[in-house]
Image 1 (cartoon, rainbow, N blue to C red):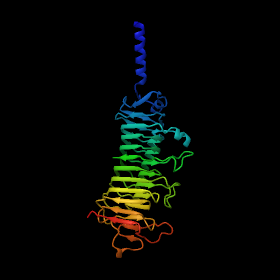
Image 2: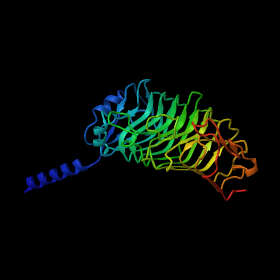
Image 3: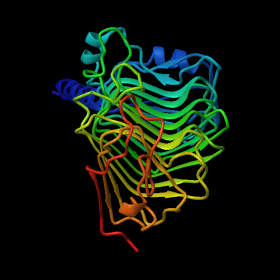
Image 4: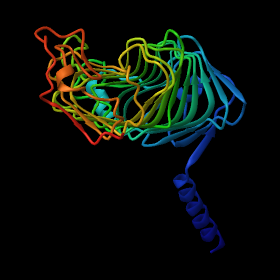
Length: 368
C-alpha cells in the first residue's frame, strides 16, 4: 500500500510540475545562442543574471503561444549588424501560420546600438513596454504584420534613421492588403531625434492605429509622423489602399521644428484621420500638417500660431476643424486667393490641381 501511495504522489507531482510555468534565466554570454536553444516549455525568460548583456547577432524569437521576456532593468548592448529581438519569416504562408505567437518584451533599462532593437514580424497581440532604445541605425522599433500590438512607455533616443515604424510585410506573398499592423496602439512613447533622423513615427498601410500621449523632440527630423497608405510607396499621388480605414492621434507634443512637415497625411479618400490636442512648441518653418488625401479631422487644438501652415497638395481637401484655436482658420472670403485661405495653403500641387477650393472644408466652434 505504501508503495502504491508513493507512486501515486510522484505521478501527481510530475503532472503538476509539467503544468507549471517555466522561467529560464539568460546567462551572461551568447544571448542569441541561448534563444536558439530555448527549451520548448519556456514561458518566461529573465535577464537577471547580469547588469549588462551583449549580443552581436540577431536574437531570433521562437514560436510560442506567449513568451514573456523580462529585462529586469538590465542593459542589452547589440552589435552593429544585429536586428535585436526579431523573427524570421520566409513568405506570407509562413507568416499566416505563425500569427498565433505573441510576446511581451519589457523592462529593459536600455537596448543600445544595432540596426534595430525590436524587429517583430507576424504576431497577434504582442506588447513592448517600459524600454529605452538607444542609437539604432535603421529603426528602434519595426513592426511588420503585427496585429493588435501595444507599445507603451517606449523611449527612443538618437535613432539614426527612423524611430518607431508600423507597416505591412515585405516578404514574398505579402502585400499592402494582407499583412498590415492593424489595430495597434502607441501610448506614452517618446522619440528624441538626432539630425539624421528621418521619421520619428511612421505608419504605413495599417488601419485602426491609435497614438496617445506621445512626444517628438530633440534635433529637427524630417517628419514627426509619416502616415501613408500608398500601396507602392509612390507619394507623388493620393493613396488608394481601400482596406485602411482610420488613424487616431491624441495629446501629441512636438518640441522641435520638422524640416519637411510635422505630420504627413496621405490616406485613402474615405479613411478617417483624427488629430486631437496636438501642441507644437515654438516656430515651425515647415507645414505643421502636409495633406495629400483622407478625411482629416482637426479637433481640440487649443494653441495654434498664426504663422503655422497646413499644406494641401490637392485643390479640394477634405478637412473638418472642430473646437480649435481661432488662429487655425480658413480666413475671410474676401481674403482668399487661388492658393491661400487662412492657415490652409495649396503648395506643391499635384498635376491638375491649380485652385484651392473650400467645398469640403468645415470649421466649427472655434475655441476663442
